Length: 467
Image 1 (cartoon, helix red, strand yellow):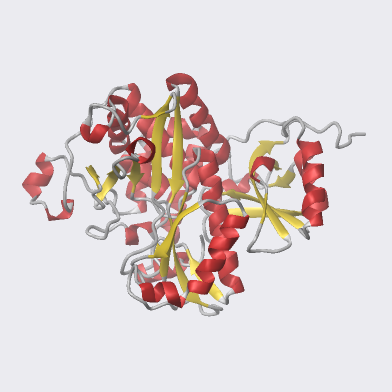
Image 2: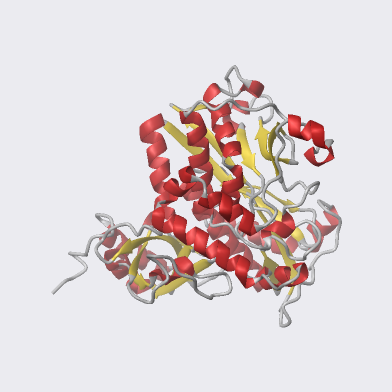
């Protein structure tokens, strides 16, 4: 007979005892259940929940969930690969107790990200959180490099409730305007308070460009923690909005026309406590390694787009001259470049210099997006790729001959183009591993097929409330 004192492989030593203490603390605070969350290949956050008293059992044995979700589409239909998509088998969801937090926006609930483990106690090859952790560890062991990362989150706030699937903005003030901040000031103040109670350090929260749109950015963390926080922040944004009678959309394109919601990635590489993007002899103070890292990102960017812009709706957003970064070029503070170099304010460059990847939206699984970004950059660093010349201004306005001479390339204009580039990119596929790479290809082609007969407005509507 097994007990909680002798769990199967998959958890971490001491987790059962720790979970027992945490469950008692949470119960004392009126928390009745724990949300166990992960993000699937399609970018949808999937969950199971357990009563708070069952947290020690979850830490000991995990919670069962089928591996079929690796090949779910955003519309909940299922595609298959050689190894995934079958009704057979089971996985165990193990909560990361280091990231467990009581949800301020959902009283009575706590939340934790999970690692997905096989019944035999091995990491599931389709677990994107495990894959990201693996490449971060490899960077530290092989290159003595660590990372600081963050995800910008843009979302549109609408009037609720929604019964017809339409989106009606809850604010009408100008972009970045004080009017809009006042219109939704109560909601955003409660959002800041909820983030603070959950230990999330917010850097900025402000009205954005599109109708009813806001953006929040949080402090830089290691990439796994940054991805976790991006999922938690979205859970919090949605929960606080609901308590105010509002609804939110994180879709890449709420409407077929106009500016959509981005999810830009920020990343800086560090060695021995020194930021490689500052204090060097390269352009804008970058070190040679930082320049080669960025060159690697640019070299793999067409394939990387299949991970960072993974929805058919993503390509309604990725349009020139809308600050979406649809050309594979870089520039200092150039918001039309796919890779924006952020040097930071004088006096803070050693801490704040980083790269921003712009063709990213919140349909992306953040663990996959960071894995691909890091893999591309490390490929450039390992091979000492030269960084091409910088682009200033809007690449879309360059004459064709000048654009060609400068190496300006348009990123994929459809999901099918992006996934074909990914399928041909051996480095990115290897970073994910064969099972997860095949799932990416199958799910992306499945999403494309699912909307093949829809026009742009119908595509926007199909994904408006999925993420």
